[in-house]
Length: 419
Ligand SMILES: Cc1cc2nc3c(=O)[nH]c(=O)nc-3n(C[C@H](O)[C@H](O)[C@H](O)COP(=O)(O)OP(=O)(O)OC[C@H]3O[C@@H](n4cnc5c(N)ncnc54)[C@H](O)[C@@H]3O)c2cc1C
Image (cartoon, rainbow, N blue to C red; front, side, top):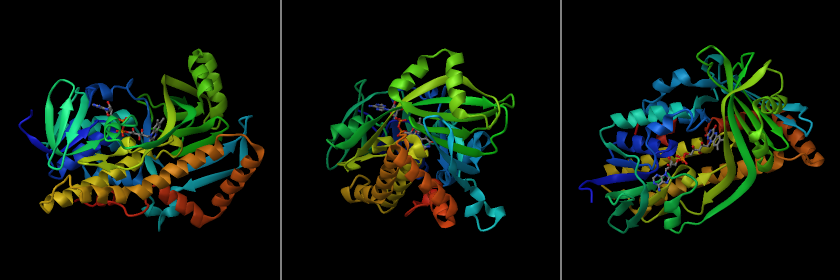
């Protein structure tokens, strides 16, 4: 068994686990993070072709942890968001919704982007480099976490190679599969959307001007997210194309010419000629929400607690708020000399995060059900809704504040305040 007793052991070094380990260690907690995959492999372009829409509040946390300066050169600001509905013929409805980032600011000079589009590989690269520099953080990867033994005094983590680690608290950031969630007997509501997201990068003739587009097609939302230009100056956007799974599977087997023409038909011609570049990735879509976030000396964060549809680009932003709340609660307990793994400490975290997570789980589920169909009366009702929000400034500002993450009782780090 390892001689060392950690304050916190994190299972999983994905975007949430790595961020949690970094934020905890940076704030004085001895932390170990374990992942079955080597960290270097997780920064390769072929590992994860997605981008993340980093909300304004998540960016403030990255800034508070000193990560943003390294990310900014690769982050494209989202200045406007345009939402439109399209029927089975692919033609957009004349009713649309436009969010302009300047609208939420007291003066034009104070206008902040609603978020930033960053490639996941760059997020991982920044997180892993910062972890490697952090004296209170240890990384064990590749290493499989096989299970835990937890009691009133400590948690033991049993690794697949026979090693055992000891910690006051274990955080599961294992993603949707959540093996520790199952080990603890925590139930989860989960279902498949029977949709698959096709993820790729598209090069186009005209600049996107920082506008993110979401078109609601009958098979699912088609998101066009502004990226930084390529090294050769190419204008680029990241695409999340949700489609019914059987059709997505067929599309993914098409040769380049046929795939590109199906893609271009949905993308439209508003940015001139468009062409997919690089590999295509497929992500089956579903929902999972844990019935509770804590057990004895165990907490769930990120997708292990709640995995949602990417329709609003908020899954990781919820995880960032989990991390910020958990670290704030743990650091307070630590400074008061209290037990980090005590039930009341963990309950504070769970109560803090429940409402925000539940609201986003429900909103994304409802939006996807409402928009991923071509039923005429439903289409009419949602078009009227889109047009109404477009015409009512306070409603528009309400949705913009949600997209920016400016909701509820925000943890300090997401307000840019050090702990
Ligand atoms: C198509 C798509 C687009 C998205 N776009 C956005 C967006 O724009 N904005 C946004 O906010 N969110 C977005 N999301 C959501 C976001 O990507 C996820 O919420 C986030 O990546 C989840 O990270 P995680 O660390 O919780 O889980 P994961 O990424 O699943 O990481 C879990 C880690 O745990 C490790 N692991 C698991 N079990 C073990 C074990 N037993 N032992 C050792 N290691 C283990 C795995 O190897 C893995 O590295 C999107 C999601 C999809 C599918």
